[in-house]
Image (cartoon, rainbow, N blue to C red; front, side):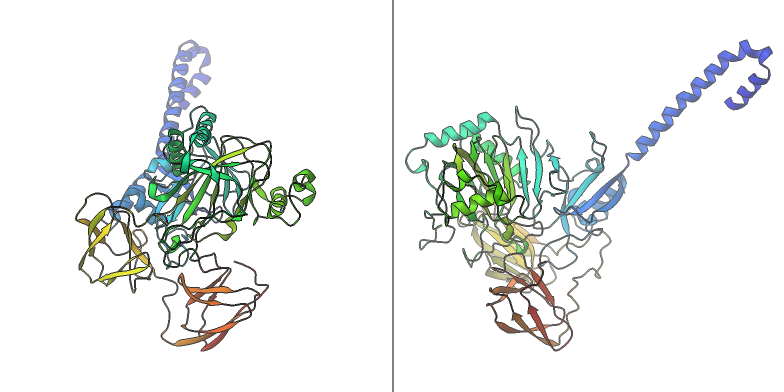
Length: 596
């Protein structure tokens, strides 16, 4: 109607000009007023859906574009057949059907039970999926398999990711915490605003004030058990710094809490080794070493997170001052980023040509390293996003050239740490099997009994003990786990439920790719043509260790998948072999085989 009125006014301008102008102005105003209202209604409607990119844990590739509505998000819980499921878990399970979730040696499809946003927030509500308020960019969401932990994604070299204030509250006086991506393998970040100068100075002063057994002293190495069952630590030529430990000073407590927050692991004294404070003077350093443990440290302990075990998951090394020269944290297994021409001659002259210090000093100028800057930290992972030990995470403390270097590090474990498992007060547990088959109970890989379907097993245990439930045998794939709590003292209940399936569209057809194994036996001759030994495993369990230039025969079945790793089965495999349908076959582990 406004359009016809305008035409009418135009053709009868001489007669109606004075009377129509006010009316036209009013009509145009009304029309314009309606336009923003329609626009606002559209924006409001769009907020009922969220578009985001879905990734596997810690991945920077193969993302899947997703769009879901507010109603869809909340329908996942309602449609689930699990009584106690949370919106967060229901969302993660449903998203598992849209992307391949990784967990080493786990039957496929792997189910995720947690989903994290790119800034570290655990997804618990639909609004967290809406675009970033400051940049309007769509969110990135990362799925974490059950039993594993969130690993920060690399994205690309130099990428900066601000950490959500809800994950790590901003450090007073410094600003929001953010990560700079340095390496994907090993996974290394430089963390900014991790500590204030006052906090750093307080930790140094506490270390200097300690006397007696707690005072600064020559650093030691060692992880294997001694004859008394404790950790056998000793001085070593490859570690020349001094250290002390700080568990309870106000500044140390802040650093410990901040480190747990940064790694998205709930703070627990049983999941850390304490805050180690180290001091280096010129000439001192720490030779190449890993932070993780292996079966060589204790063959009775499960150090593999992918199979339900526990290990040092991540290291946070905080720099408490800025030395004049040297002192980087270097990662020798990374690609070259410089040449030997870059190494200052005065630094080389400090050490003999055949010394480890000189060799590491060369690495410090040619390999990836994190420089010591006050208030920053190095964050690196000993465990890959799919739960394997990462042999490439070996690192070293570059020998200090000038000044004094102070640092503080904390090792974060994914579960109760090694060496601290037999502590706590006695507790009783009732284990109830709601599965339709026998459940095998184990503690640290030791058989603790079998529960029949519908059966109950009562057990006397201790605080912090961690039990695993499996099908088939006590060394089978974990279906559930339980950590003994402090309360209640008696009658703690562990309800063992059937494993969860993919979201709400799962069916019995969603089974392991390897479930088509036949009953027909197959012989596989394995020939190790490498010049070092390799470990052969099946479904995460060590099968045989094969020496250099040696061979053996595996009696197995069609479609079984074996993995070859070095130097032990707990390390990431460099080769896999799927058994074919022929009765006899040969698996050659060739010297020039390209690693996975």
